[in-house]
Image 1 (cartoon, helix red, strand yellow):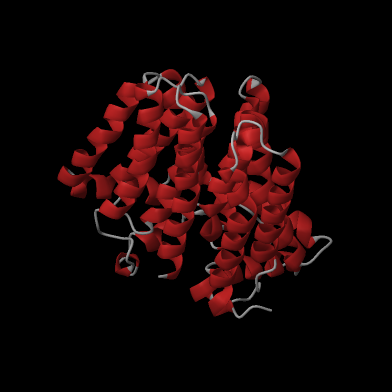
Image 2: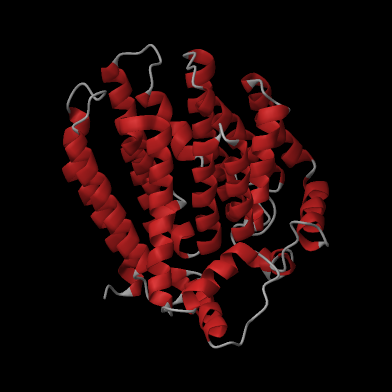
Length: 368
C-alpha cells in the first residue's frame, strides 16, 4: 500500500514513465497518420490499468487532505448498505447507482468500477469520434489538470462528465443523445451548465467568432460587476431552483470564503482556460479546420467557460471551471491530428508540446 501522502507523486511518476518510454518513440517516428496500432493498444491498456488501479484502489477511509471526499462517499455507501439511508432526493442517478452496488459488493469494488467507467467511457467516445489517432486525445485527457482530482475527490462530477462525453458519439441519434445527457445530469446536477452551453452553441450562437466574442466579453463584465454576479451565483445555487445545492450554504458562508479558490479573480485560471481558446481560434479561424464536431465542442467549451468566468468569485470556483475544462483535451489535440494544411512534422511537434506540456503543468500544479 502506497502511503497516502505519496499517492499523487507515485501516480504521476508512473504516468510520466509510460508516456516517455512507450509514447515518445511513437511520436518521434514519422509519419504519425499511420501509427502502429498494436503499440497504441498497448499504451492505452497500460494507461487504463494505471488509472483504474490508482483511482479505484485508494484507501476508502483515506485522509481527506490527500483523498478529498473519498471518506465521505465511503460513509454514504456504508449507510446505504446498512439501511440507514433509504431516500435519495438529489443526484438520484448516482445514488441509485451506488445503492445497486451496496446490494452485492463492497465499497472497494464500487470504487474500482467507478474508476473504470471514469477512464474507459471517454476513451471509447474519443475512439468512435476521432478514429485511430484518438489515443492522443485520450492521453491529453489523462494528463489534464482535472483528471485525477475529479476521479478521486469529485467522484460524482467525474462520472457525470464521463457519461456526458459519451453522448457526443450519438449526435446523429437525438433520442439516445438526450437520454445520455439526462443520465449525466442525474449523476450530478452541475452538468446542466455544459448542457445549456451545448444548446446555446447548437441553436443560438452558431458562429465561432460570436462565441469567441462572448468569452472575451465575460472577462471585463466579471471584473466590473463582481457584487451583482456574486449575489446572482448565491441566488441560483442556494435558492429553490432546479440547480439548487445544499452545499451552496457552505460555499457562500463565511467558512467557505476562507478557501483559496474563493473571493478572487483567478487570472491563472483564465490564462489556463485561454490556452484552449487560442488553439481553437487558431485551428478554426486561422487554419480553417472544417470539422463540425470539433467546432461544436469548441463553442460549447468557450460558452461554458464564459459562464464560469461570470461565477468566478464563488468559493470552490475550480469545480465550476471543471464543467468546461473537461472539454479542453479535445479542443487542444484534435487540430493536430486533423488535416489543417500543415505538414505532418509540424503537427507532430505541436502535439508533443501539448501532451508533455500538459503533463508538466499538471505535475507542477499538483506537486509543487
